[in-house]
Image (cartoon, rainbow, N blue to C red; front, side):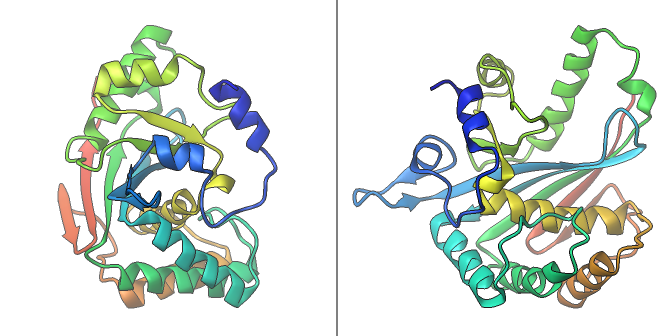
Length: 252
């Protein structure tokens, strides 16, 4: 089954604690002799729209022993009987308590987890009304920025359309950046979901997003009780333990 059909087959599946062995074995980690996953897994998530927003964030989350981490997330789900996808954009009031559990888990895993984020300041005109070749060149430059300090190996990424990337996408990405980048449905992977939730919170803080959802407000406020972040991002870089942030002004 090719990658596009694999992704289509995964649409509508329920959230699971571990992604399928096919993906675990091929991306984001090495296998021990007993068949369990070692090393780390890195996921890439994006917040904001490069064609319409002046600020957007890309985040790479790298976690050691991802199988263990995913099982801990499963425990949080079971404790709160929460089956929905973890994502920042959700306004589900029932996500607040399990989201607090995720934030506590991030705090507990300090030293074994890292978020590397880039806050891009841009203009929609940088990516609108340009040729397809120029668009891909400019998009590739954004990947170069987020990957600048990345040492966690291959990536898994939240797919941005219902069919996922084309069959040639990964080959082109390897040629440009030297690592693989497998796009999968977020429902198939807890680590992508955690990255989406946490990086979305950080995006809302540093991009000074106006939040009206009570569920989001409660989640962001709880995050601030665990991690100290300024209300604005005045410098070009910021480091806070498990979180490393850079601000990039895009000009073409």
